[in-house]
Length: 348
Ligand SMILES: Nc1ncnc2c1ncn2[C@@H]1O[C@H](COP(=O)(O)OP(=O)(O)OP(=O)(O)O)[C@@H](O)[C@H]1O
Ligand SMILES: [Mg+2]
Image 1 (tube, protein in one colour):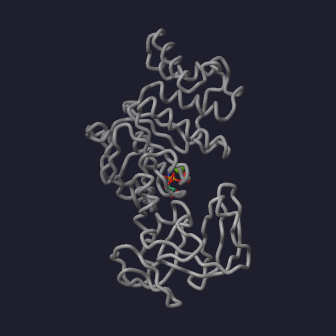
Image 2 (image 1 turned 180 degrees about the vertical axis):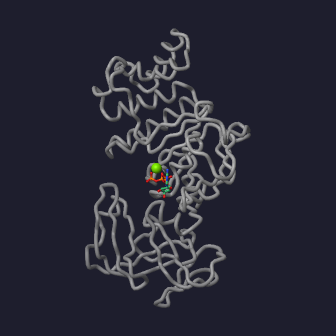
Image 3 (image 1 turned 45 degrees about the vertical axis):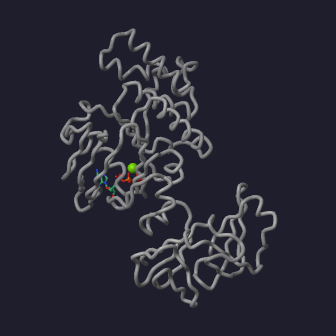
């Protein structure tokens, strides 16, 4: 099936800054696609080019196979929800949602029906008569979503849609957004700098780094098989052990060997990488010994920081609540083990 959005070699420069530096991406119909990257990596610039508010200096953007690179924003079947979504303060919830359809001069009956249906979907029907200042942050956020979705765009672009919300509400709204996207079936492209949020919400993630794509894949792919050291570091927590790559593994400075499953193409100075949740207490295919330096209780898990001769940075591991009951204390000697297949090697 033809992707709904195709981005081909898109470049955008601002003076000496290349904000987007040759990005090519295909986004499938009905996808929940996340653009993830650090501040300044070019996420908003790429989104604005998709919306038509910014022209690429090179490359093309296709929608349903048609070149829309030079099409003005109001002629694209694409809707952008801004980083700070401004609702009209003097209008009710229903009037805010109806506004876009009124601009399109839709018949009254149709507007009324579509607004009601949309408010039902975002569960705001009982609040249809309120003004924005009579709503909570999460409710305002849902009005903004309803306003964008009611026009039935082919693609909805969202720039940090949950940025203004506190942590708890943010978690709820992540699931809400996912439910909503599933229900309306519209392709969502969401910008976020929060890797947890991208993992929770998206079915595909593109990691942007300084205007270039670092990796594109499912949440599982980018988490379990990061393509680069940057991606490994950016998504989730990762332990890095520096050393020298050799066939089948990595030689640590103290002479120890870290094994990997299958030989990588990596040579010379390198780092072995292993996730904290893949390390257990007790020996494994890879083993390190060290001293517990810190414990951090997180409710669901207990994080242990262990000083080892292998690396200057302590090694972090995460014990489940069950394991935590018999966890060692600070100052105790421990053995850490993990599997070769849970180990990646990257060039240093
Ligand atoms: N209109 C502009 N004029 C000059 N430079 C710009 C302009 N817009 C963006 N930039 C620069 O382009 C780069 C990418 O900016 P962009 O806003 O796309 O980043 P971002 O990934 O959205 O970051 P954030 O997470 O902070 O929102 C930055 O270096 C930024 O300073
Ligand atoms: Mg931005």
